[in-house]
Length: 243
Image (cartoon, rainbow, N blue to C red):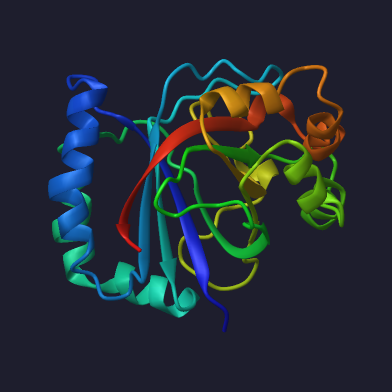
């Protein structure tokens, strides 16, 4: 089996400020998560600044995305099956997360497209695109349309320092989402069919890359393949917990 990653989106508890949310998540909760041996790498993507940069997408409702890596899907299943997972980790989430919203989870495999310009010590700003396929499109057709052989070149033309594409694991696993049609009416977050992640050296470079008249950006985004209102973006700063 291949290594997998889980993207876990959530918002802050309404009686906490975002600053309080980030502080608890990056300290006490992060420390607790590191006690689960199945987690091999762990990065927190913290919502950063104005999110209204990319028109045509749904409202950015999450305040962050927990990103955890595992050796394979069976390790995800093993962690969830541990009594400590519910009794400790999920109980701790109540202290800082708004758990009333639907909580999309995507278990996926990585296609690392480019990282020639990436400095892991100066990670810059990160854009996550959570893509939901257009109505009537199969996931297979969507993935074929939303990625291409020129993705790495387009990212470089946009000044991105790193680009990764995550596509869903479609068999096995306790956290794998249902297909789009099964929960398309949920508010506050439903299924996503893939995640594209791009990094830039700073916010100014990201804004320049995603300008409306940017031909490489339009080609990379391939909006015709997306259900725009159900797809969302998250502009974030990374907190690396387990490198």
